[in-house]
Length: 299
Image 1 (tube, rainbow, N blue to C red):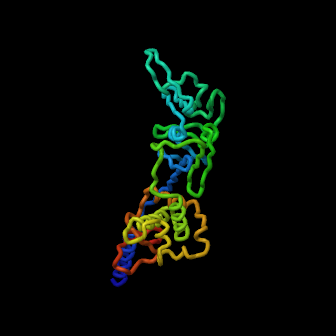
Image 2: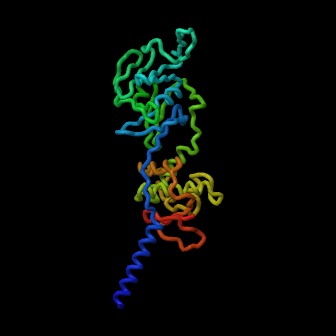
Image 3: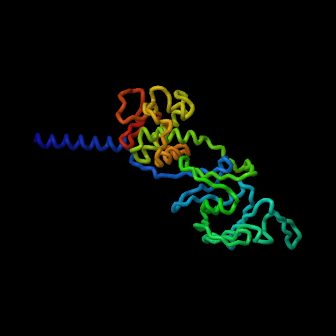
């Protein structure tokens, strides 16, 4: 009987531990999401179809980029064809009814850049060229590889790996206001946030990294903490690693940059938590929300 009782108690304890683990450990996992920012002359461009990376190539919406650069874009669904022309080449074409249609049809495709969806070939002002990848339709938008922009729209294009940003420069262009996105964070916010994630939890999963990034952002929103990412990170007594030599020059790992940008773009897996620790707090002034990768997250 004693052995049976002991076995029963042992089984009960095991069940309690398992239930406790289920309650406090985050059973869900986040999928890594890469948010790519596109800038034209240092202005963030607003898009309704997000840039993405596929097979090592960055794809961007040709309409939003071209129009931000002052070009005009037309879509012809019957042939899955896109025509792009510079604004100073815009013409008015007369219909049979002698009505004016501005920019709806091109009298001469040799005055434009022609793309065919699914084809690597394009025609730029009468000259046939090859892209490194075919144009694609995503969410109703024509997406083209980044190299297309630099080679055909007379731009200088750079890739900033530290902020996952496409930087496009063209002299003499003022980006129309309707294409400018007033982003809620700066590149500096992203880099500082990625640095603190790197030194605090670089060994965690993307789930844990995003959670820690959100703790910092929740503090920024809280009246009990400073109101910038930098000031939260360097607040007295909060993050000891920031005092170590080299922190301010640290280049964060790619996965820490990705996690920080996910949090800044609104991916939140810890709600309003403003504390985390790898040891459970004894204080009754905080409430445990969940445990992720061995870290405890609290309101």
